[in-house]
Length: 337
Image 1 (cartoon, rainbow, N blue to C red):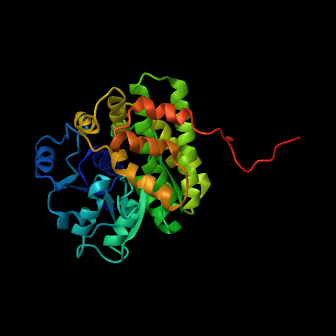
Image 2 (image 1 turned 120 degrees about the horizontal axis):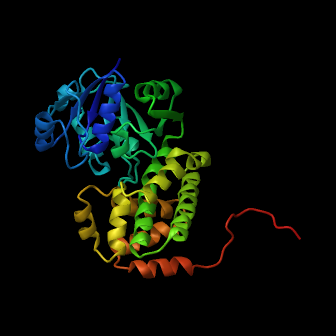
Image 3 (image 1 turned 90 degrees about the vertical axis):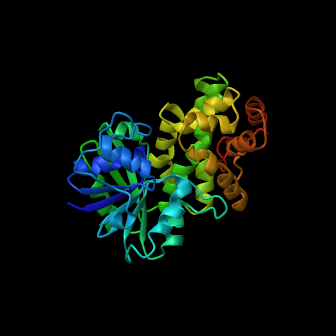
């Protein structure tokens, strides 16, 4: 039994808190929003983020961050990616050397181009920052539906410890030392999911979706390899697995926002309608900047940026993607005579 804290009372934070509680751990939930804390203390349900899922009474809910993180074996960072830095900053003076902090947000920080564990380490250099990621909608994890994820850590001991905390008969966890690859896959798939949603909004079919998923993972993997990641990571849960589920499911806020944009909504209108943080919007510019930094062509991600921020029409973006210069599908292969 471990004492654990979850920072963030959105859908994913609540789903993981319930999972760990069911695994027999002592769980504390924290939110910076007084309204969320009051709602959970009163009704034990976050109707906006995870409707219908009851937070068990044995899970403690607090707005006191010092109380939330003191004497905890692990701290789960379950706030949206845009708030990871400010939340990590709140932990200064409250956590000790070697504290395990598990990031479950998916994003690349604009400006620094840091992954979320890098953001945490930038604010708290003495902690042990790891990542938990994979194809895992909170709506399904909260209901106990079978799900698989991967934990990334620099050392096996930490990875196995985190694996043991989360592992259950409905939540299978693998381990992988490629922390950066896991984070890139989990972040950039949100940008591709925006593209998939835009295609859906335009009325395109399964062929288009398959093309975006296939060429999307190709873009992500090429960038990842250029950044020193293991290409095998992108064939796994946080690569092709997460990309498939995010591009195909209506649980995906990125796909839903993309659908609205494909139907003619502006970015602001789409985000307002979804009523949740659309992580791909935050990662799109950073992804393009990473491509430029490492000299990797990212045509789908480039077009998503142009649709989101440069007033390019969605239909024009698709046409330009289709009419790019002809190339081989796979490079560095020998042709026969």
